[in-house]
Length: 603
Image 1 (cartoon, rainbow, N blue to C red):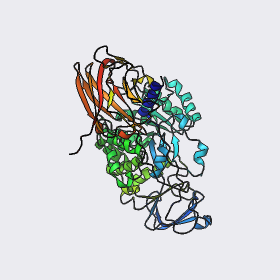
Image 2: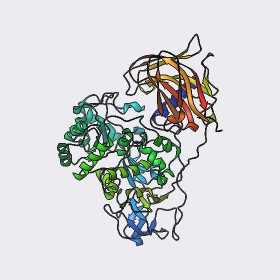
Image 3: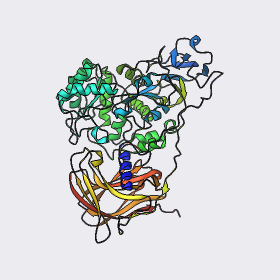
Image 4: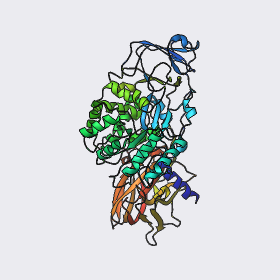
């Protein structure tokens, strides 16, 4: 029972938010290269000869004064112990604002390393909402400030219910006013709803209920923003009075009619182009890993997630179409805000926002407009007082750059120093996580009872029951031949259903290493279909790296290379799942001789 419980817990955590999320070191070391004197541990600074982004352009070299965590008007307002920085050749911009994230685990620490000092979260557990008094304070902090929708508005089994968070779903328009009031009492800063009525896999709010949520948000003086996927969805919600779209649609080019409606309603858009690029098969995460300015400050979790993908192109997500729509909306005067949608596959908190800025420029925004999309515009549209602009009295969330981002937006990646509430932030990252214990090559021959597994590991069932679904699985050993038999029934009660067999570490092992192995092989037969093998590693989040294999009625040997599991950290292995297709129905399959294959030795 202990082994089964531990495996189930690890499987859920890895599938949702990543197993064993670690707290990173708290920044606190003094910042070097202070020109002369002063207290480099404090939140008062005098930055001389620095060009400052004023929301539209760079000033001529001037003195930027930070006094007790705020931007001051004159040097005379700075305390006597203010540290002095020679800012010649440097550029000061406001702390960046990521206008679309999902923030749990180390997300806020990860973001701040890359100069993102504020995050607009578009769905997380209400238990993670930041205390508003704490957010307003000027204390030292190793994390970005969090503003969040908290719970999203969706229906039973709709988008958002697949992540293991208890969801307060809506069933009728009449429930909307009380639902919105509950979000406000929980601490939500704005309301986020999901409207995807044409999605064939996920149920959605109907237009009447979505409109009621928008009206209820306005009655509570809260912004209402929406997740949409298509042009038709967007037009329906613009007509319903939505304030902003948190994705751009990429199924077709925007019509002149919709552009006029968005202009008249003053709707803003957060395109999340990096995620659309990933859905279009472009693999933008690999570009971040290869970027020296960004990769230096990535931790192991971020690298792993950047290496993952959606497993192929997803229809309806054309990056070229998204580029066209961004350009058309920008030309029409519609506010474009920058958001990463991290931690989707191929993204990383903090780093991906810099990539998003470059994609906005590629779509047609000027470098200055792209920078506004991550500073002044989100601060204005979400009423983030004291953020997004380095004006007198503003909070001293400041990023010093080594180069001019208005000449090349990619220069936002050349970060010289980061300040949060006026305190310097150490950008160190722990990348050298220890590997787990070694794993033997033989994982299961299934010729012993109970079902055999190496010490520290166990075989058990896995299904979407743990996420509120109704799929089931049962394991037995065949009476002849010593094989593992999986009887599974997949239902349509979960958006991404699965059932099958799980092999993973027990409490005693915790983390294992597949170092030295090149592939996993196994024999399989069963109900003909395409099945999945999903790999899990510690300190990983997002969708598990997956490969598919075809099963038939006759035995066959399958060999899958470990490097084919994009984003899998072989040194931090926690488990793997042999899973059914997502199509509802009964399945029976057998596996045998599950083995790890070593990499060939060089001659």
